[in-house]
Image (cartoon, rainbow, N blue to C red; front, top):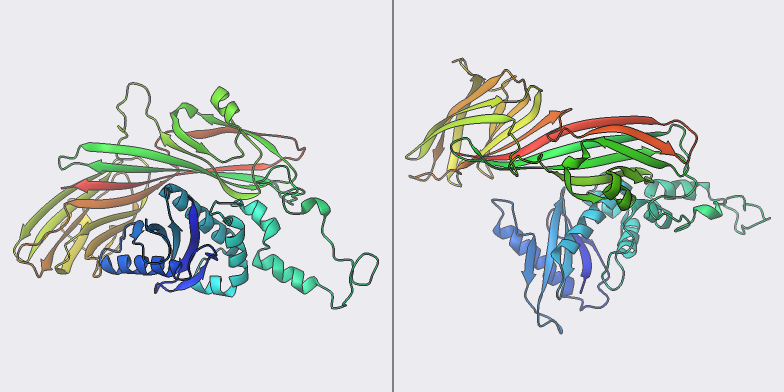
Length: 451
């Protein structure tokens, strides 16, 4: 079996639009909507619901029940219902692809946007999922030939003549499109024919994210780095590109865009492809350390020294944060859950070795999120030579408070690569023009630091 249909809910859990569900009873999608809303209401405090929810049989001839897979997209929630022996990863992959399509069409995805473009969203539902529940057309370039974006529809409607009869040789029959640019006219499904740009360029963004767990003694228990090569292509015609990388052997568990020629990569470790027009993800990979190094032994570029004392109805803490990298670290966020019974907190931030505290500045700022009871310390910019200290206390309604025994840390390091992967050169063939090439690198991380 495959995906039964797709439902889009607003912030209050009410459906905005859904698939036809022509092969199911009318109450079938309502069961899944109620199941998702009930699950979310049970986890209203943490805000984290099980991504796969079992739906007990309640109607029709569905003795085995069903399940719904859901993801949150801004203020919306996308729900895919599945029955039978189906892989949930297929549903989540489709939900991610449909979310990217909505962003490609409307930029901002919200309830108001979907309601204003209801007809377009419904056409996208029909074209991306066939009647048997299998993903059909999910390439944005191919979809734009079938379902016109809002801006193009407005332009076409504005350009239509008011004269009634139109056609070849008649008044008003001058509005025409190229016969080679229709839907599925291109032999390559991810690229249209006749693409033209005044300025030809291709940009690459290499983003690597570290995920690590650090023990109480400061030793790294596990650390992994996953990378993504994103591209934005504005190239005319049918360009054939050859992308060479420095040290490509560090890329393992690779997943490529369909445009990449896999045999060339397997043989020469070179990316040969005809790119789609616009933004796309060229490759995703996992960083494989050099031979001889321990698997997952990627150094953590920061240090945290927490000193927490838990007493009756509260506790005190002193947290020292410092950077281990020579580059500037930005958007540092350190979070600690104080427990569901926490009532308040008082903190000051200062530089290491200084007894002068403050509530904001270069040392960052702190806040207590009352709904989730999370103490958050944010540092906008951090130099390699700096160390900052957060001192404070918190109160709790419980006599024995139970704070989380791990800090959640996130950070960004511009122009940094954990794997030292870089773009060596980009060569163009099949076209005679010169193109602009740009490369940007960024490292980020999400670390659990236990105390």
